[in-house]
Image (cartoon, rainbow, N blue to C red; front, side, top):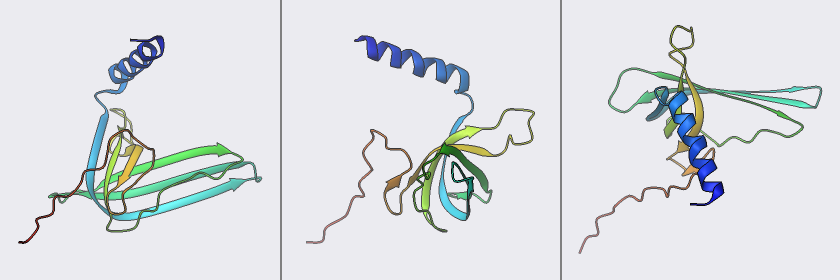
Length: 133
């Protein structure tokens, strides 16, 4: 194992020790999406996306929030529409805080149009088709 891999493993282990109990993923259909972009003096860009997702086989709704700030450049985001099937990976809020039920988004995989917010190493799952003879 090289020096670079050791540092990377140490970083991931410390991250999982700190946030491992709060990491969660939710799969379901998008009920509502609200995107809000702001520019401050043509220099500072803010993007806030609020998603409401209904998990599969559930009546509950999960609120997911993605917020990002960037200097000078526009912040990229994948196209998501109401009714799309998505997988959201994120962190729950801290216990005792008022936003403990919201999910802060780390990555979104849109399975309807096969796009990801941040590229991962995993290959998308292929659907199995039955051929008729």
